Amino acid sequence: MLRTSSTLPATLDVVLRNDTDAPQLYAHVTGSDGRGLVILGADGKTPYRPASPSPRRTVQPLGANCAIAVGPSGSTRTISVPRLSGARIWFCKDKPLTFFINPGPQLVEPSATNPSDANYDLDWDFCEFTWSDQGLYANISFVDFVGLPVSLQLKMGDGSVKTVTGLPSDGLDRVCAKLEAQGKVDGKGWEKLVIRSPASGVTLRALSPNSGRVLVPGLFDGYYKPYVDAVWAKYAAKDLTVNTQFTWGDVKGRVDQDGKLAFAGVGSFGKPAAADIFSCSSGPFAAGPDVSPEMLNIAARIAAALNRSTLLINAAQPAGEKVKTYYKNAVTNHYSRICHEMSRGYAFPYDDVGTEGGADQSGFVNDPNPQLLTIGVGKPL
Image (tube, rainbow, N blue to C red; front, top):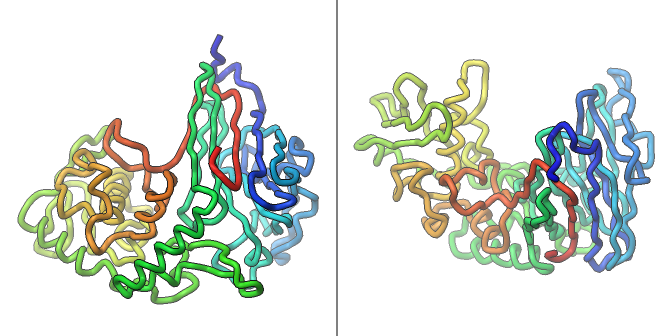
């Protein structure tokens, strides 16, 4: 008998596997519920709610041991996860990660773009999930960077299994090699996304373009200009149709006399810069009090098409999209292209945009009645 949302248990068993070469793998579970910030304790089952520091005391110690020791290479550990939203399970080889608390309380997460961060020189990564009355949604993510191989396997309520295999065991090295090769091809700086340990020289991670711009100011400035100019010229002469995949249905846009891609009765977009395209959330794609949900919906589909460089070949977004045509233009998100040559997984914020019933690119598993989630670290499950 399948469980309904009203009969779902309060916790979900999650099996963690250390398939790395590390003698110890640590995990940390962070998220929030209706009462605020939650971090799972070191026992893998007890929720910890850190107190808020006073307003003048920022970046304070966590105040509890919340590092879950998974065990040596080849071992597994089962933890019990409460209902959480916007949650992450973090993994780190050899040493626990260091988290801090700001007033709120708000969690200060490890940073891959701050060389002075306590975790910068460690080998770590994470996956994301929400476990609610509606069920479980979990995904792997390359939005910030590529690091440890993480894979997901979900046993669903009907007994069937969904799997996201993630990167191969040598995935990071392969991604870095391809980024360095692309940098040699076009001279645009893709090799600067490869981050090595300042102490040991070991490859730690490959940053996304959005993260790379934090470490290397000016990286990719002007990169998308010729492509965007060509897109604007194309849709000054013909309509761009965007299927909102929601109640608004199809909407048509055209570049107007002011040089904006305008959707009648909805709003318009100025030309985005590379930073806007990689982030999908700045410039013309930024949210704000005067930006309607319909405009944000259209923005997500245009941003996805720009990352994949398909607007010049497809005037019906995303209804006419085909995965085999993604990233074929010389000006494209080569980081995302390379990630998808290795695995499914979010490589930019709207990597889940696609045709109805099309092949998923974002690397997620979901079910309203989950039985067991298994997460492998180090090689595909």
